[in-house]
Image (cartoon, rainbow over all chains, first blue to last red):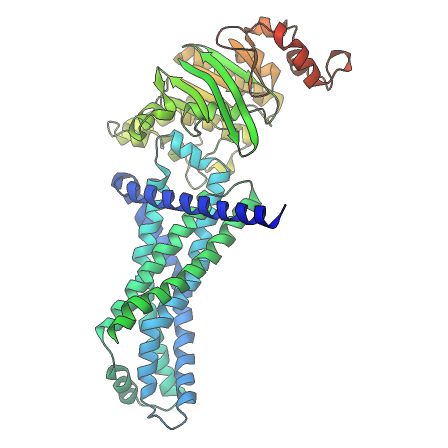
Length: 259
Length: 268
């Protein structure tokens, strides 16, 4: 196969893939109208994708808060008043690290889980069985997961913000011998409601992307165990990349516009 | 009535159906036989719109399935039961919920009606006590019977069976055959059965169609198929590794194609 032919095939495959993804999004949007089908499943998915993901989200927040406080103190090296540790912990946790690190962890947990589950359902003909029983698989399988992800990601990230900030605070008290007043003074100094709004909206977009990618990869799984494994791997990789792309997107279009 | 008319279907470079034509009349049990990978499952997936043909039409009760709007397709599916090769039970649900799944799409049915229908369907397949169990707790034969119960619970006009006895021991296969016959005789269901198991085909079929190289090679009653002169059909139904006289399958297929007389709905 020549280079030109190989390139042509690759380009054709990518265009077809984009077309399939576009069709998938259109079908998922259309399935939103079938509330009677997806609503009962949405609460179950909120628990499975959201509540069950809380421990990993909060664990990450605790360690991030501790490390940030120590990192800030190390970077300031006496040139900047130490209470700015609170500022740095608050800003980085709410604007960036809670949404992105939690998003990446959930991309692994939630994205792989969705892709593996739907992939298994696809290769064992359970998705076909749903269709023959007159269920719309987009309404029954995709919409509840996407809604659960879009709602639960910001909730987990919101809690991660609180826990991360608390961990940073405690680390400042314990390791940096900062008083609570000093830490809170720093945290409040440049705090704005926008910080939280930005972090939460960003994490909702991550939840939307991770669940859509997981569903798409899962429902496209073919073959047997290998196909399901590939779907799960693809879901995690694409979700992680999409989180970073969206992170840059929000920074350029929203954060940058405010400064 | 189910009609495939000149259906072509391929996946990439692989052509699976190439002019597949067959009629299934009401009250019949038509068995489609053929080699593994010959496109039998592909053919019946077109009937419920799980696949769309590249060319040709598939009609169910005079409705052209590939062109049906989504709502009408779902309405049509409510009248067609589909029994999957490996049952395709929802593994996160109990057997009772699996069987009730299709019924829950019917707003006119109350929960007590649904429970009654589930019990009846499971009794019909001789599995009255498994409602609270999960698919993983059942044997392969029991899962297939639950698959039949799930299809039957809908009280469909048609049931499509995709290799219902494959991988089962002879006794369990006979039980499944009996079930299929019972569904037809007791409920008057029109059936399409895909199988390679000739014993099962003779037992449940009112007609048998052999799918070969993407189209119907021969279709006829059980007697007609048993007395077929077509070497390809003979090799398949007798389960021989080679054709009579040691000929290769493709050479014999070419030589005898003109001699094969298609029966109702089929074509050589």
